[in-house]
Image (cartoon, rainbow, N blue to C red):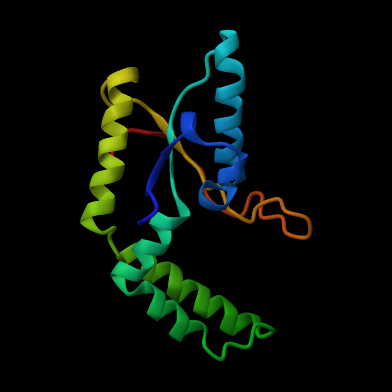
Length: 150
């Protein structure tokens, strides 16, 4: 059975950190603990780590990344920066598979039913290894606020 690409905050707990990251898991816990007490928290969904890995595999990016990193001297900052740029550029130029794109659009459409057409959302990273002992990635990824549409 394939793992889901979308998980709703209402269905997420700290047990899901490996699939949705710490921020999303914490949002799920928050919603589940305070909403029964009458505290309103905006709902949303997480695109899972499985969705990301499926994207890499379906588009061939996994092979491209492996080839780009093979034999890379990680102590050579110039080569490291060049490899990182090549991977980022390739990812930006590679569209999501149609099935994943449709799943995200459907989840956004479901949110629109609650919050109204073209509701604003925040698109944030939630790394699965973020803020672990010995590994902090806070502030490393982009956050996009007031995004409308899928």
